[in-house]
Length: 529
Image (cartoon, rainbow, N blue to C red):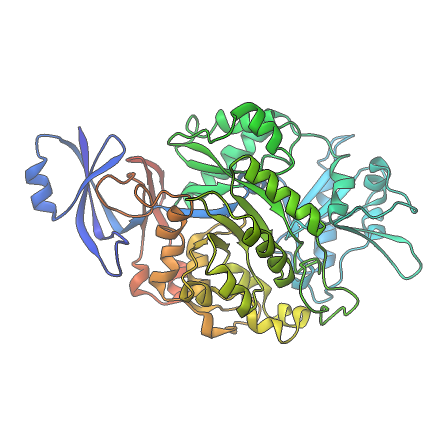
């Protein structure tokens, strides 16, 4: 038996302003759409439930790049993302330390010094003033940098004469003293010393994360988590025991290059795939992030001319990793923020393209010169963009990157105009997961700091922005015939909003709430309001 779904308005996303009155679903699949009375008459003997929502139905949102476990950790740990002063951050760390058991580490998530009146990263001595007995770690919002107190550094074996690892930075002051600030691969020195989470913790983080995703109308996520929590099998088993078991949620997992051999040994060449859990491209990093000036750009940073960023791998190392993916018949998904990093990645993809039918993924693509866009348009390459980066990075990104590169930054409209497929994502826990914030940011490109809109020639229409999180995100993983649209034979995955975003301003879109989330024809989230 099936369900007949109705709402104030139902947008199919087949094309702009295309609507239907009702949806008939059975066994988790959309059987038919169209006029309410016609569907009710045609399927009357099969309908055992009618579900009317007082709101607007869209296809369920898909986040094309996030970290499911990482987002769960942010929800479980001390979250300092929105603290606007170093003094308040230190106060909250000191307060949280009162609840830490002996031998435990205090890990705070998400600091962003650009939000403070004094935009300088906290020094280890400021953390030492709180405690030299407990290890303390502050993770930067970008997750490409962290601050450690002396106790954490001692446990990790970090000493004055330690050498910087390839692709990483260990900051020192003018007299050569360690400041406690570690960037990109430099963080690994500390991470290796941190207590390794067990499978129970990972399952808790996944469940916490997915509950939050569903409450924001997200029915599917392309996630990268498999190499950060110890043994690969422990992490993937945590996913297998939650996704499709505890949670109706569709997870597409990228495979980090550091565990790809383990994955191939377990899975063989190819993908484990069902309605809930599957594997995708091999993930690797080409550079760092703008926040710590480790994104690799083609000119010196305007606010620190002594550096132009960090290449995580040598040119030869990058080539060898991509060739490894090709040997496993895998596409690659490459974290690429700076234009020079993009240039290096495109050089290898042009020389060694993926198999016919596969597409490589550029994750972020924040700074991209016009010549690189022209090259990408000729390649089997898609881009996972994060529209809210514009909201959180401007205006400080201008001072950091400088001209002329800032004019080639966050070029979402140029990508679409060039015919490059782009998916919308949050990179959670780096940004908030709410896709409605991403849609609004893609439309008005307004900074959350000064309220100004930046590089407005790159603004998208509301429909183009909504496509990023529905139609396009499904196409990226070759599910354009089963996800991202409300059409017969597609998954019965919907979101119900309390406002019609296509008749709204960007500010109104930001204020829109999720009333219900439906996955496979089941209501998995319902607002209490």
